[in-house]
Image (cartoon, rainbow, N blue to C red; front, side, top):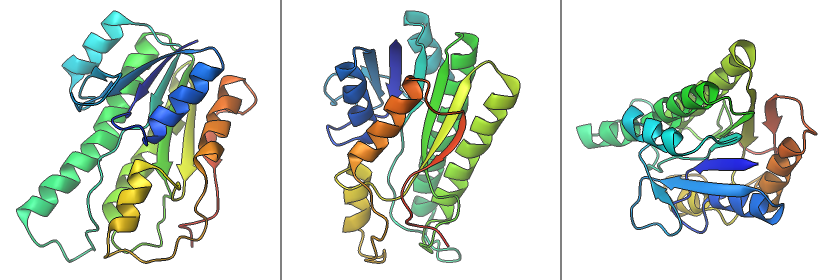
Length: 215
């Protein structure tokens, strides 16, 4: 199958790991990143409709994986300190929600078979992650909508902290976060989940990995 992975800016990106596992199984993978310095990627900003349209004019993927995200430090409710904080959060939410919508829209139009979105817990025990909760909650809603109103098989992989991932390392370096990493999972658990999806072994919907970040 031809697989499009959005979110592969570094070798430690979860999207890159998913793509590499798929390549080992014989699939063809194209990586997207908004970072022009990233290796082995096609440059595209998935929050821009024109960029997404150009990508889909050049290929018709069987599978679209939305693994894109932009890390921002914690912003507790009521603690927003500046317009700069708000701008960072808007960029994050755009990558998670608008990017997901544009990819999902293009995937449905191109008659792709699978749409896979990666997100975190809908309810996070971290008080600084209200914005993250909003973004990933929207992802899950879009997956549900796609399963109801398209021919896509759509999946939301609900993740705790992933050891060794680029986002995971940034999270652990944020001193405002708690030091509790209960439920942290290995990257292989994520790639195993996507492998099972591509083999048709998992029903569309939400896949919960690990036990961390829940109450």
